[in-house]
Length: 302
Image (cartoon, rainbow, N blue to C red):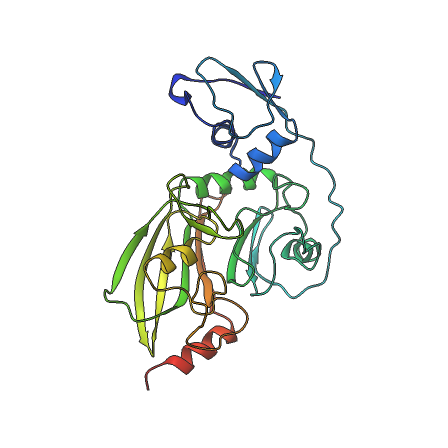
């Protein structure tokens, strides 16, 4: 059990935000622990993630024991780009969900990892072993996986401090007026459509830097670099400036200018971080899938 005395600077802070900062947890993980009755405030079980703390309160967190996952290892297509005893870098194909959830009980990357790797951390929880960060189902590209709890904590800290390098390629609708730009806007749940994210006043800070790489017919190939990693961040930010990712069924126009199938043309092509054991700078790059390159060639100005 971990016990904390709420500091003066944490006055009026939400309970889930406070716990996430104290325990290297994601806010969603902290929220789940609160709802499961794992948190007590001044000796009383607290079940509301939005509970407002006051200076001098005592917060106690009891993490549940890591259970053996009931998930099955499945022999699914998954390219392991690199692995050692601490971590792995894998290439997730578009169309694959990262971890099991409602509607996707199996066939996920986690199921594939259990077959391909010789170990996964348990910090991510029973359904998310090894998962340090995620990318959307229809986004392809490089993903970092922790193979033990120590590595998971250290890699999560790098993500929290925004020192992990993550760069994406995307084909966005329309031609950019500038060669590069920045989009900042706090991201949270859409106020009326809970399946979508949006720029909202009470969202989490998010920043995206984009660079135009090539002008296409009615579109632009861009590189997008993240300093934060919010859900659907690039898709929301690019749509907010009038250049949604081509093929995006959620944030794109109702009638797409081109008949792209299979979701947004977005690819996580670069991943850089400091190795948690050796301290070495690790940098990986991977080309996009044929589906992406097909549209890139088709839209190129001849």
